[in-house]
Length: 341
Image (cartoon, rainbow, N blue to C red; front, side, top):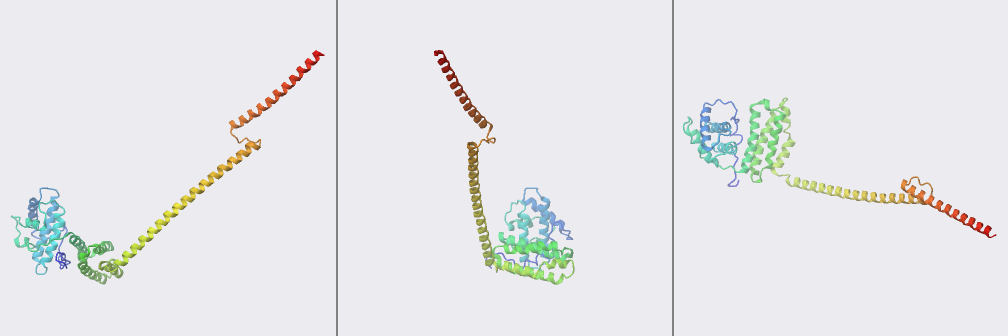
């Protein structure tokens, strides 16, 4: 493990078990009201806004009660490890959700425990004072992931009615998310994963009656092996190769479809153009034949029929006028012949 790498050793499940983390949980602690008073003063000291005061105080109250939990259980717990969880929860539940005038977790913690006028010993409040640790962004996400996993584990262990397939599906999803974290924490994630799998094997062994056996059956050996390979990075090369192969095939298919579409479109347009020219040319030939060589042209437009009739009548009239003129001339000539006779 590198020098600046966050150490998850000893935190889960030791520091999460046997403590109620919900802000609406019913607790029997006699000091609950004292922590409410302390957190109200802490809130007034680190923020100028009254926004969500109620939630601020409740989240702070849980953190105060957790300090008391560490102090009371320090013979069986490792305070150094559990204080890492405390600083994580301080940042996630308080610092990331409210606008404060303290920007570092250790500074906010000191402002929290320096409040006066409360009936809580300094030993309880200062139990994590000597164990400050910086939780980097990557470690913060892993802590959040592991915290959700062990919250479900604690729920399964304390409430048998929660051992259902409905609860098991998100539990599995949280475990699968472990593979998505940065490689710099890979070795620690492998260790944490194996601890979780041992718990899962216990569920498979002990949840033998319906309906909880259905939930345990979702933790199959195949799923465990596949998830382990992903976290260990054993199938990374093969998976990436298969993904690249699939992407290449998809690209080739898309290019082929585009080419076929272009060719089909070109052939279609060419066929339509040739067909249009052929039909137009055929109609013109038929119209020419009917117009030129047959008297049956009733299909022609009315204006064209009228022009043809006028042309024909004009010709007939000219022939009639010519005949009349010839006859008239002959009649006059005969008349002159008679006169001279």
